[in-house]
Length: 342
Image 1 (cartoon, rainbow, N blue to C red):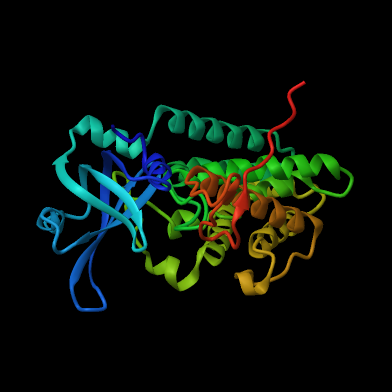
Image 2: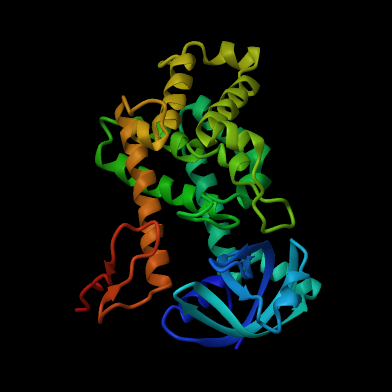
C-alpha cells in the first residue's frame, strides 16, 4: 500500500506492523550510538501533513542506503513499519527518488489539505475585511499583503501543535473563529476588532521562528528566532507595519478617531505580548485587559484541540476507548462521545 501521508503512516503503525510506501522529504539524518557504542541512524521524513521519525540499525542491509542520503532529498521509502520500545523502526526497506510530480505532491499535501488551508486563508481574509477600525484593518491587511507567502508556509510550532508546513494559517484561522465566537457572547465588553487583530498577529513572529524555505519541508533554525523568540519578533513586525501604515496623510485623517491611534497600537502590542498567559510560559507581561484574556484562551483552546486531534489520529489503544497519551498531552485520553442521532 502507499500511505497518503506521514499522519496516516503514524496512525496505521500505532497498533500493528504495516507494509507500505511513503513519499516524503528527508529533513534530518543523525548518526547516534547505542549504550554499547554501536552506531545507528535516526531519520526524519516530512511531508505537508507532518513528520515520521525512525531508526535504522547498523546491522541492517539497508543501513548504507540511508546513510548515503542527502538532506534534504525527496524519496519513496518502502518497507515494514513497526513501533518498538525504541520507537518507529523500518524493516525490509528500499528507496527510490521521487518524480517531479511526486515531489510537488509531497510539498503541497493531499487535495483535502490544500483545500482546507485555502479555506482557512479565505476565512482569515474575510475576518480582516469585517473589521471596522481602519487602523486595525489596515495593519492586518498590510501584514497579509507583505507576508502572504511566508505566512502561508510557516508552521505554528516545531513540535506541539500544527507543526507542519501551512500549520500557522490553520491555527490562526481557528483562533480567529474561537475569538469571534467569544466576542459574540460579550459584545458590550470586548473590542472585536482588537481581538481579531490580536488573533491574526499574535504568532506573526513565527514567520521568522518557524519558517520553511520555499521548496523545502525542512524548518531551519534562525539566529533571530533563537535569540529573541516569536513574541519579541512579532512586536517588531507589528511596529514596522504600523510605521509603514501611518503616513502623514493617514495620521491626519485618523486623528479625530477615538480611541487614539497610539492607544490602539499599545493595546495590540499588549495582546501579542501577553498571549501565553503566564510569565513562566514566555509572556513578558500578564493579560491586563479583557481582549488579552480572550485571545489567550482562544489560542490555548485551539492548540489543545489540535493536540487531542493528533492523539486520536495516531491512536495507540490501551483499552476499548482509552488512548495512550501522546506528547505533549499530560495524560491518557478517552475517545469522545458522538452526538446523539434522533
